[in-house]
Length: 258
Image: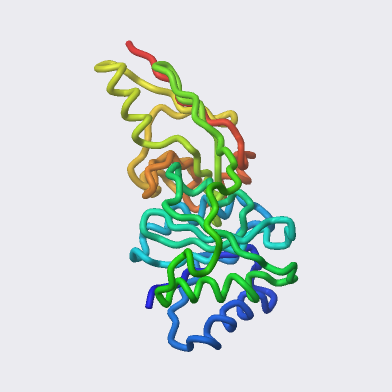
C-alpha cells in the first residue's frame, strides 16, 4: 500500500485535519498518512504549491498527495493526476500547475456533489483508492486540461538576474525564484574577472555564503538553500520583518567585469 501525504490550509486549531485523517483510517486503519503541512496560509495557492513542489519527490514513487488548499471554492472541480510517478488529488484551482513545468501524464476529474467538506467526503476516499492500487481511470473521467496559473518568471540577461521573493518561511527567511543554475550560467558566460552585487530592499551584498552560520547572530546572510534557491535571512532573526520584505519583493543580481 502506498503512502498518502496530506497538506492543507486547515490549521491545527480545529477538527478538520483529524476528520480527513479519520475518513481514511476508518476505511483502512493501517494506512500510512504523512502530514506535509497544515499551516499553508488560508486560500494561498502559491504558498501551498511552493511547499509541496520542494518535497513531493522526497517520497517514494506511487505516493498519493492529498492537497486541500482553498477548498471552500465550490466552483472548482476535483481532479487527480499522475506526475513524475506520483499521484496528486485535490482541487482544480491551478495549484497543480505551479508545482512543475511538466504536464501530468494522466489527468482525471470527478464530481463532488456540492458537499461542504469535499476533502473529507470525496478526496480522502479517492486518495485511499489510489494508495490501494486503483488506476486513475477507475476513480474519475479522463480530461485533457486542468486550470493553469503562471508563476512569476525570472528576467535573465548577461548583466542581471531579476527575481522576486516567492515564499517567506516559518523563520522569516526570504526564498526567491532565483536558482543556482541560472546564477552559475551567467557567471560562466561572463568569464574570469566577473563580480556581482545582490540587491534587495536597501541592502546590497557582494558574496553568497555557504551556511547560515557564516555570519554572526543578527547579521544578514545570502545562501543557495537545499533546493538551490537563493535565500535571504538573518541568523537567529526574522528577515521579512527586519528588512521589510515579503512575497513579491524584488531581488536583483547585477553582474560586471573588472
